[in-house]
Each structure stands twice: as structure tokens, then as C-alpha cells.
Amino acid sequence: MKILPLHPALVGFLRKRRLDKKFQKQKEYFELNPLHPGLNTEILEPRWLRIWSFRIDKKYRAIFIFRESGVVEVIDINNHYQ
Image (cartoon, rainbow, N blue to C red; front, side):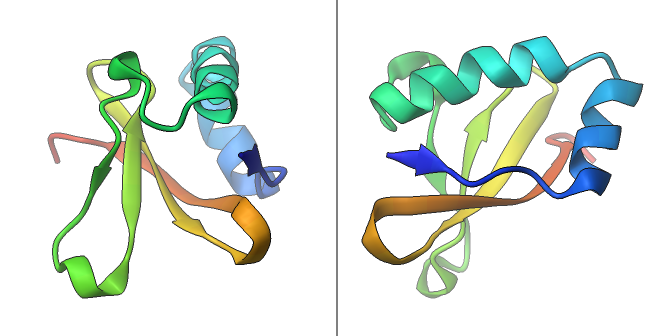
């Protein structure tokens, strides 16, 4: 499973919060196994939208969608508790 390159705004979001190394580590886990236990991958409500998330750390999650041919696009990174 491959994750498309992040939008520049998301890269800036990660850098500003010093999450770029954590994201890279989680991205590697995701590309090897999208259901790795450390990622806590889950489908979000409402399920029919088919929007998913995986954990970057205890506070932040990457929101993503599946594109054609097994490619994933991260569409947002946000504070899981806001």
C-alpha cells in the first residue's frame, strides 16, 4: 500500500508541530501493513463516506481515503481530541 506525497500545507502542519519524524515512522508501518496494531487504523463515521484514519501519536491522527489501485491519499492531519 502506497501513500501519495502530502500536500505542502500538511507538510507544514507536521513540521510546525514537530511531527514529521513520527509521521514518517507511521507511514512506513502503514505501507507495510495498513492494519498494524500501532496505527489504530479505523473507519470514521459516517461509514458510507469511506474516510479512514491512523494514529500518528496519542494526540494526532492522519485522515485518509483510498484511491484507485491501492493508493492512499492523506487528506488531513488533525488533533484527535478537538
